[in-house]
Image 1: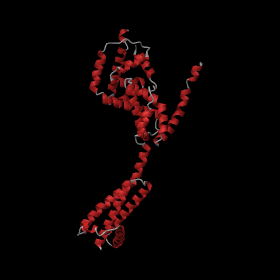
Image 2 (image 1 turned 90 degrees about the vertical axis):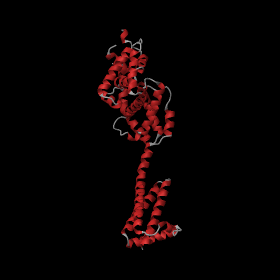
Image 3 (image 1 turned 90 degrees about the horizontal axis):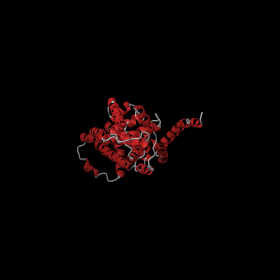
Image 4 (image 1 turned 60 degrees about the vertical axis):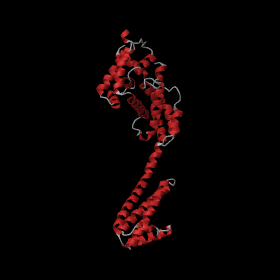
Length: 194
Length: 156
């Protein structure tokens, strides 16, 4: 067995300790301790920012606004956290909700359909499958709602039922949006040139 | 590219991504301008007895108003001039108590309610000495007591 394999389980054994510390910090922050909340921000800002960055179409300034908004909302709602799940899970869910609310405000359904048509009519661009940046760019060019479904399902690991509940659509619509998003993505990645 | 390959690549995108700059200073500024959830919870709890006391004062006000409509012939306003000082008011309250003890049971009930309200307000003021609105409620309770005293005198 290699040394690299021996090193793999370490993050797993750290997880319970981190969550216990999260719980203590949450209790302190709920009592008005801003320093404790800053610890929580430092610990979780990467995961929160990653999620809202992808949902915003990899838009850095929008993602920063959403991250700030997510942590301010978390601060306001700390007293509603019941310790029934990990704080990281609760926070991640809250952040995704903030991003989706933004999506709903900016993206009425009719403009989504227009975006789908626009994206479908765009010329196919060459793509090197090994390049992560190109994949991210292709996702960013997806219509907002299709991107949200793709990001939540294929990257964040949500179920269609959860996505449907959050986005206010039927499970079937979520599946259809995912199918459409994957199709547009593959097209953008240059599958037709293969 | 197959669906499987695409999904594998998408899964690899999952993970943390730090903001390009530190967002904490801006978040901290917004938090300092915001309320603190725990403090709000405590304040809400502390206001329960105040709400009860205020409700009692209002109930007595309505009760006394209807009582005065039934029992009084003269104008209350004209008698306000006969209460020049707090000392006089206390004397009249004492007089009203004596009358109420042997007279109209409605006055006795009103007096009991006012006593409870006054006690609750004093207790609340001791807990929150900076609550200016409590002083207003206490003044209102005292005014109702004076009114009760006048009604007691009229009944005698």
